[in-house]
Amino acid sequence: MPGPKRAFILALLLLNLFAPRLNPLLTPGAAWGETIRATVMTVFDGDTVEILLDNGRTEKVRYLMIDAPELHHPKREVEEFGLEAALANRDLVLGKRVRLETDVQPRDRFGRLLAFVWIDRPDGSILVNEKLVEEGFAVPFTLPPNVRYLERIRSALMRARNGGKGFWGVAAGRLFTPKQVWADLPLLAGCFLTLEMHVDGMTRSKTGWRLFERGARTTLVLFDDPPGLFGPIAALKGTRVRVVGKVQASYRGAEIHVSDPVQILSVFHPARP
Image 1 (cartoon, rainbow, N blue to C red):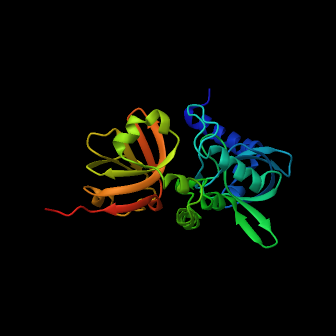
Image 2 (spheres, rainbow, N blue to C red; image 1 turned 180 degrees about the horizontal axis):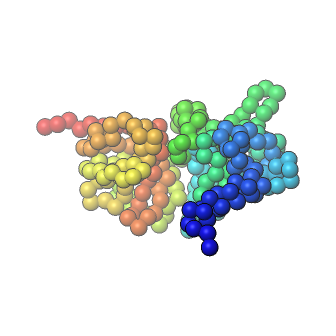
Image 3 (spheres, helix red, strand yellow; image 1 turned 180 degrees about the vertical axis):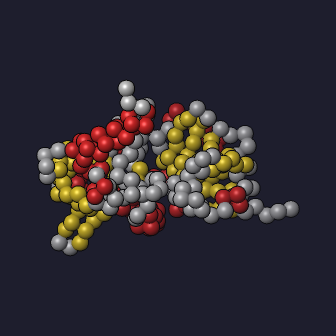
């Protein structure tokens, strides 16, 4: 029998021999910043589609750097603006010829192609990922190293906020305290609102920070990725903040995820005695 070292080398040779045939989009020449042209055949929700490649193969595509409300999540109900986001996405891309641009990491853990999706028109190109954020149907979802259009996506989020587009307009009329969110969690899960919280404490996790108000089971989760995105987060302790976000239920209680500083409407520093 071959030794462990020889078996390992043989496995590598077989992988190099067959991997390009099994998945040509993951070959070295097509993994980083590749441009792929295809036709959108199916729109699943606000950030996921199925495309037909020129070679006749289909691929499931997850839009890079954005997160739209859930429409088909196995453990959640249809979230607020989930249908609207899917319809907006459908109007933009269904049946259209699109140009997909990958980044450093071309696939997620589910095997889906990760891409920025472009529609090329005579009057200019539209970045669909950016457009959905600009219309208030998605928020930034940053997973380094895929951060090529970070500033464009963030600018689109600010335009949506300033224009009261999509969920921004709805959340502006819903002001809740952490205790109110926890009390009405069964009704509020999946909905967008404005939360006013006195930040009594915070804890650090691998992906960000958890901010909480004493006596309330509602937590603000700030995803500080890339690091420094929110500035000195420790300085928020003792302040009163207002943020816009989607309510989610977890085993810890109610959570509102904040993926971009634009979601923070205000920070009030109470006068010290």
